[in-house]
Length: 183
Picture 1 (cartoon, rainbow, N blue to C red):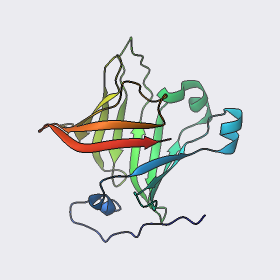
Picture 2: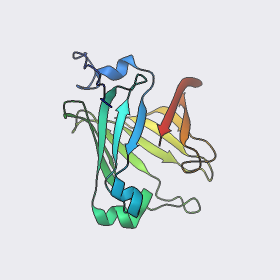
Picture 3: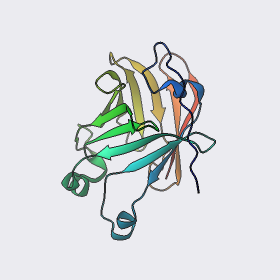
Picture 4: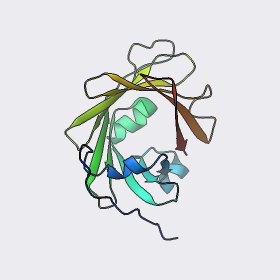
């Protein structure tokens, strides 16, 4: 099956280079590429993702970077850097998360992501909010001012094939934004 690729847009004032296409879409699908050895042996490898538009065209690719020991020992709490590349292999976004150990019963070290675009230029943060049953996050701008709130379903990550997150603007009520993670 041949993959279709989206055609890049020319630069736009005020938009980080490589992200112009995001101003024209209201939905992206993220699909993890599972390695055969990982599926068969259960040995965790660096995650890779395809990011597509609703027409199935590849828009970006994402590659996780960390070491083998961190992946095997720390599991989903591991530190990582995710590099998001356009179809020409140019890095357009860098997402970094340090190692933080937390549990629902001892929420002293909640997860936090730093987002850079272009790499080296901080554009925002994603901070986990403590809740005993719901995945909740705050999106902050580069000045650490709240911009959006996200809330996932009660069931969380593992029991549903797709996980929908609702979005709220920090200045208004509910906005029409649903994030869907496709396994």
